[in-house]
Image (cartoon, rainbow, N blue to C red; front, top):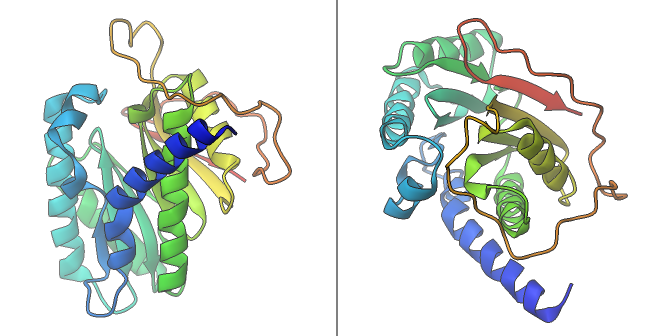
Length: 250
């Protein structure tokens, strides 16, 4: 990588890390064990470049805030939950102390206004520590910077969430973009698993929408030694009633 490209990547990484800094801060002593997945980070510029309608973006902010409040009402010392909404689809990540807690968290989000569906990726496990959360924040920054640097991905199509080395890609994207973003993500150091929570749309549906690319070279299509193994991805059938499909990549 040339000096210019390295500097460009470092600038993008710094911006991405600044945007995600609240995630690590949320695990500091005295903080409420719940994270809102980006409601405070949406700016005016994002409205113009996001594939979601402005109404959906506002709804997502409201869903995250209301969802966080509802989770807080049922929270106990063993619950550490992140609520992320994209195009009115909710992703739950984090840890809980029991299966009943996991189900209860999903139920309260399903009753939240404007929520279309809930993808429950909560784990029944001990809460992860500050060091792992800091690592997750760094990985998110690297993923965002790499997506921005890719020439053939509309980076704002995806929202990136990390939990204990697992990267969740949320968004509105074509099948090609989803596969490409997954390929980029699984090559990032520290990524152990990629889960796609993406609404697949056709190229025709995106006709006339602005595209965004990066300035860096597209990574090689051959998986490197540090890549997360990726089996062939089967077609994503729409779930009953429509909505996002969670696809684990192990």
